[in-house]
Amino acid sequence: MNKNKKLIEKFKSNLKEIIKFKSISTDSSFKPEFIKTVDTLVKLFKVNGFKVKVLRGKTTNPYIFAEFNVGKDKKTVLIYGHYDVMPAGDEDMWKSKPFDLTEKSGRLFGRGTVDNKGQFLIHLTAISELIKQKKLSCNIKFLIEGNEETGNVEIADLIKKNKKLLACDFVVISDGEMHENRPTVEAGFRGGGNVKVTFTTAKDAVHSGLYGGSVPNPAHELSNLISKFYDKNNKVAIPGFYKGVDKITKEELKNNKTMRLSLSKLSKLTGIKAFKNEEGIDYFTQVGLRPMLTVSGIKSGYIGEGFNNIVPCSAEARVNLRFVSSQKPKIILKNFVKFVKNNTPSYVDFKIEFDNNFEAIKLNVKSKLVEDIKEILKEVYKQKVIFVYVGGSIPVVNFFKNSLGVEILSIPLGNEDANAHGANENFKMELVQKALEFSTKMFGK
Image (cartoon, rainbow, N blue to C red):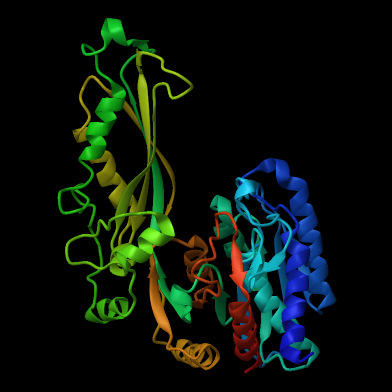
């Protein structure tokens, strides 16, 4: 067996040991699984020569900090990842047991194969082999958390309090998927925030036959509000919503037009039958460089078995907002509140509740470090590197930037069809092999 095959087998062995734990952070009943996951990861780091500390938050699952030093004169790299996963959902939809690593049809199946156990274990496996061969070229630190999927509200303070422990020359994050399975460097992330809007029109639900058509219906009133969020050109109609938006550069537009997502491909992947972009804006520019507001949930009245003929007394909408670089979330949210007030009838009582919000970030894609990484990626994947402005958010990127003040590299290693939060999450073996080769070259040069 050649060295590359040995490395792949070692990776699969490491992943098998971690996949089996149901470290589902959205459900507190799985707490015992987190203890097993942490204990196993600590042993894995230690057996490969790392010094390990377990850091604890007030309400979060434990953080694992591990480091290996080769010399004070060498650069230090901090690798971030998370060991918590999403629920498996309906296990009948899976081709194999979601918490048993299964290899079939050239893919590894299991919850966490790509998001994110598999991706940080790519780096740990490659680096451990470099340590063994005495070919590691830099000092390594890992910070692996257990609450990424729940939107960890404590990690910003943890990073700030442990600045000395986490001090490094740059941060590497591998989370998410490559575009079209081409070597990808993520150039930025949108910020985000969530709002709950509740409309109330009565003390309790009333009989629809006796009162319907004569009294306000909160479901109707909230729907009227929602219908005003966007104009006919698919732009958010809330005054001030686009305040602070960066002008999209010609270079960014040119970059985004090198990537394509056809409607037929979108439909095949998701079942969606239309794009709703702003006029003249391509998909990747729309989701990566333009702000967005979407209603992520609506609740009102009776939706159980059969029918209950009532006029409901309240209605609720969950609204997700995404911000782009240079926007200030507090200003946009203030404008949102004003819009709701101005568009709510006097006979409706309303309540607005906010979740955490965070700013967007653009990463430096023209640095010497990025140029070096591009060359390694091109060498391994035999394709030109593409830059993606990500519509989603990784808040920890902002926290690292603000507290450590260093450059951040976000390099996803997963396949585009990994189905990370859905059934049959998978990691293509072809890309596992390339990811291990890339990690070995990055930390061995």
